[in-house]
Image (cartoon, rainbow, N blue to C red; front, side, top):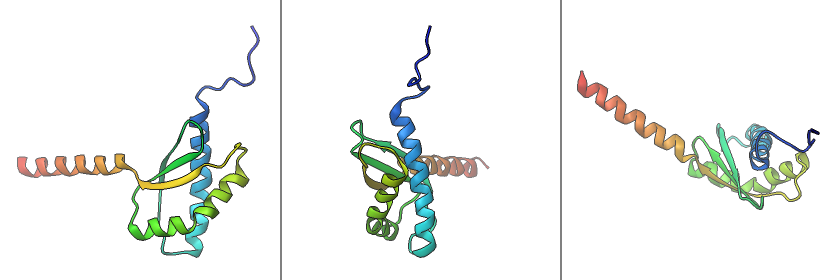
Length: 119
């Protein structure tokens, strides 16, 4: 039985999300070198729409100032995605704090409180 060269172990969207995460993370490091308002940001994930026209960039945390800076540099980030990937179209990037991180921090705080109350 012939093995198809186009078969991949995981879906295209997951591969695209991973590539976008790498490109955007690298570009954010470059932007941080010239714009210290951004601070340290960690890209925790990317979620593209099925048509690949939009991508939500999830960050560990996102202050209002960092959100403004990201909006100012959106064209630069999208340009980097366009240059460094072979996508048919460059998705429009949106940015938000990762809700999973906030949920995890809330659970940790509850556990700390319970631990203190038990002592």
